[in-house]
Length: 329
Image (cartoon, rainbow, N blue to C red; front, side, top):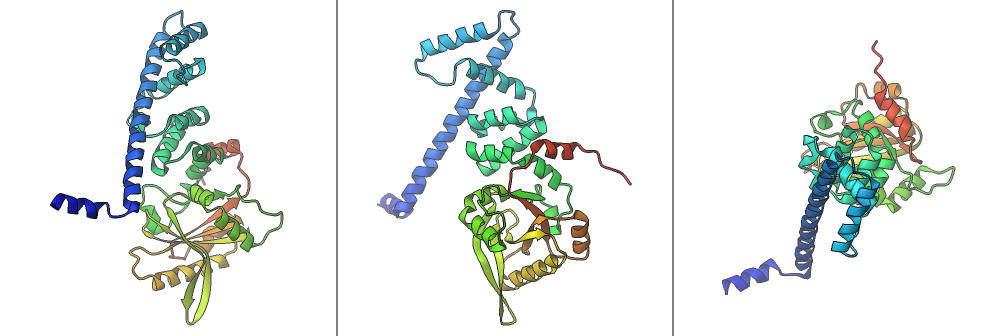
């Protein structure tokens, strides 16, 4: 009787049942993926060792592929191209202790994208870790790589961070954001930009990071009987605080700092239950880093200024910026 009562309370609604089913399915898929990745690794290891033989080559691979097809009719991924990919997979990571324990945590499609597009071990490490953290689909990862997310992240690490963010292992903010998914006219207003982001919120969350949870647009704060509106308001799960976003269609101006400072103070007074102070992000079409630094030099509020771009960047240019030596004064 007690057991039946427990079950009735544990699974009391259809919502609970759906969650149980979804969790179990996801766990099953993870296990299947883990076994697939281990199998591809073992196949790649075998082929890599076989490559030491003089007879190894396309003809050998074709014969192996045919034998596999004969043994498992209709099996996919074990043609010449697929087998060479497994060999490359093993050879890419066999001596890389950093990722060998992480390899089974992302999909084969994501592995293929990372191996084909990431140029260095550091970039591969970055995207593998990011895939695990953000649970990227193949489409999402492809978009991040094409937008130069790694390069933009590395360039952002050199920027001065507000105090609440300095202690984090990872900076949740970038120095530039790519919003190529917006279909904006040539000359647009700030309201068009905000509305476009609302309509494409899933893509915007992918760009800023999935730790951001959207709360509202034109969020109202009241000070002294007057109403003021914040363009977009989010909650950041890692920082455990509110994050205010303001958008400007032109170049950064110093007066934007005092306005954001006002908003953050209003948010903290209005939302006293928040443990951590609110943070601000001012997104402009362009900025002069020296002007930004001077504007923020005496400001104590946790905020950042970044650029937004409406087109995907040239990754080669970003990579040159990363590799550019620092000029010592």
